[in-house]
Length: 262
Image (tube, rainbow, N blue to C red; front, side):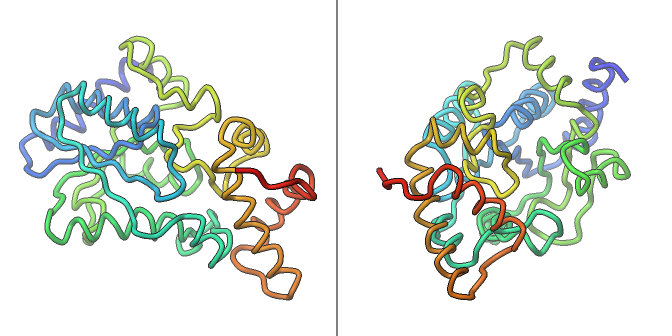
């Protein structure tokens, strides 16, 4: 399927629910979600933007980018965030996992909970998000749902739309270039939008880029990891073992015996 055909398919998904009320586009400041935002803006007349700030772990430049884009599209921006700091929770519970649903406390505490709290007084009938089936095995279920999920529970919307579910990374970049959409500047520095600077799934390359370009976040991670490391040495492992050891190896290579600077 060509990019043009995928664009037509994405618009068809959105058109099916154009007449519904209480529509929201989830925008993280990332490349996938800005594509969804642009597509939604072409098809839907009335929708709001929801941005979830990860307290303590979202880069200020990501906040500014989201605000600028929402202003350019002339859409109401709703910013949600947890009262808890990411690195405080990391230090308390250890590294989250990404392999099964219940192991990813970062998603539950910093996104799911704040969405559910918002929905208590602001129901979400239709949500639109830039999730792709190619992103992970867990998201391959979107291939069976063809980009539309009907939920029986409140949280991310009763009807959840994923217009670019079958897109590849190259498709996304082709759309960005063809439509002259802005790309969050943090991609050029840390390979991500900076909505979640430190992620348990990050690779060594991203870790090193954060060390270089985001020293304030790197210092917060070092503080948290040193405490987790101390607990582990005293016989108390917090969080997922494999993820802890991955970061502990990186700590030994690049941080051990180094002076902590803010």
